[in-house]
Length: 139
Image (cartoon, rainbow, N blue to C red):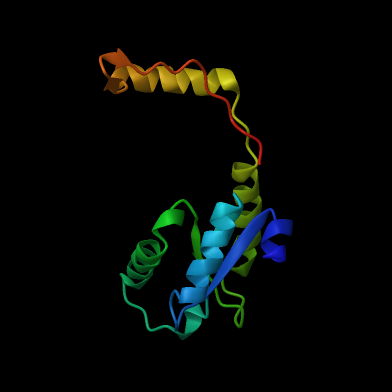
């Protein structure tokens, strides 16, 4: 928990042979609740028998089990052979930038106004919901 608290980006390391475990689910939930950037790292990818659809099937299975973090990118690596490890560092920087990005109140208000013009907010006892302004809270 302390490691999650101190981090900017959390790497959720999943063993390709085991898949997503209960402990992985708990750790992912904690990182998500803490508002941290998350990267799902599938290690030991070199030990898996593969066909043309193995990676997509694996991604689908991960996102089904961790449905609340489908925004998190998945990277398949092998620490043993070094496969894609260099790409991991690029991905860490990208996720950090995305997670620390701040959107101005004006831009958020514009997006909400456009959304309201497409789909009107619900009414309660004949009164329409009014959204005065939107702002991004700090982490």
